[in-house]
Length: 51
Image 1: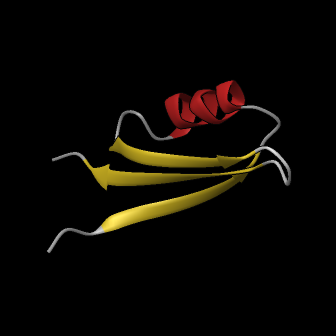
Image 2 (image 1 turned 90 degrees about the vertical axis):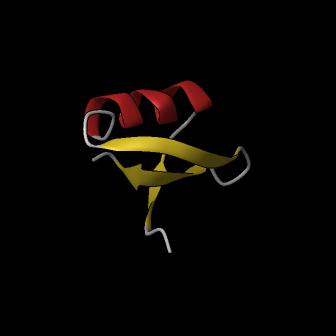
């Protein structure tokens, strides 16, 4: 069974969400999926640890 990490981020746009991923998580984690809600401006990243 795989362990996924879910990260919730307050952001104003999809681009800001992807910049957050690239800045803080790209080296250690693969991006498996994401969800962005434009109304409440919250994004969620689903990450899998690189080995």
